[in-house]
Length: 300
Length: 319
Image (tube, rainbow over all chains, first blue to last red; front, top):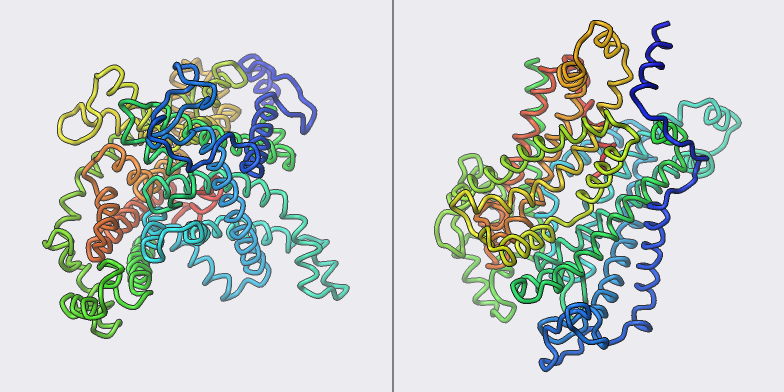
């Protein structure tokens, strides 16, 4: 009686959402996935499709505005303080962001998931110590420690990858451990162990496939975070160094010209924001695809 | 209750010690910090001279013990760049950072709670979709970029507000908005989802059958029950701001806080000042987490017996 009433009232209050088949994507999700593919394509083929040399300087053509502000067709998005083409640099910046993002996500995902699976399956002292380390690392000032690390080791793409990997693995570790704790007590794992399957095989063949989808979803979310973190480090001057190009670095050097050349900051930041936004949207989509419960929640 | 607080206090001390050991290990990784503080062209004699001046030629454990003991009383040695006690420099920057973080979080809560409630109450409508989209954009924008956009719009184009600096109330407007953007996005999502969990509950129906106004039901009863996850995320957001985003915003707006100081310490290759500022930032985060833990245990007695309860809520929103 009560629940029927609740249902009736909540039906009155809430507009009924349109039903979508499981896994169907919205326009926003399609756009997001499309944009990510575009950025990856540009990153791979930047050398071939970029109209100019990313470090080709010419003071004669410095600070040219984008085409819709009276610029020329040759430099569609304008030029920076050294006369370098902004469009070309955004394309090469995509190369940096995407490659660092993918490398860091792969390293942290493999290391974190492996440690998490072992901790959740073996338990005992290994688990205790690992979770304690996770608690400590979680309480550390991440950006500052990354900056200190880059300061000591010298700024380069490699040190950025090291610094971002050190703080990135623990989310996978905790997630994998939590899910393994649930999976290991299921009947099919007991059954596999009863017939004498070696632990490694149990983990790889039976545990891993069951925890993989949420881990992959987390990885896309982490990709967004890593791309932002790389831009932040490069912006502070502790990341990618010239002649390499990075969106964060472009925003940094544009900061000195924000009164006269707004496009130097706005355009790379816009591409960065849309990339991160797209990764967030795609991550949410993957979660809906792989998690029936989330599907029910989002359809409500 | 006492045992719970004692356990959290012990953990807090352990984290601060861990931070110092890590920073110590990193700065001593290449032999002596003097090598970092001098230009690469410095001769071995110059490095040795600075080593003996700053005491870096002693055994490493002696230096580490000195650092740990000194930090208890706020003594981090002398700043190489400013030639005054490093601890004093850091603590003089503390009020600016705390004011910035405090105001930003106040703004974030004031904006995100009504937005999240509205989205949850009008679930599936255009209101809801717009608010969800705004919050998603909010969490995707880099803080330093928002800062520059606001400067271009309000300082350069319109000329309403100062571009950077510190002092008058007008100086606060842009940095506070910039720093609040990210927590606004994230808190709105949390308020929305925790409110969605409450509106279907039977006590809401009872309230309505008793003739309570929707405003009373929503703000007095549902929001109160939804407040623990919201409080958790608020605390989590404050530590995220202190541990990273404040640094970026302070650099963009030349805000004289600890984050900018840490960046300047690196630029001036000032190791004692760097160690001091990183330790104080870590200390802030730890104290904050400690206060939050105590606050939860007062709000929800169940947490006292399960010290790791907060972990689950953190996992939902990975860093």
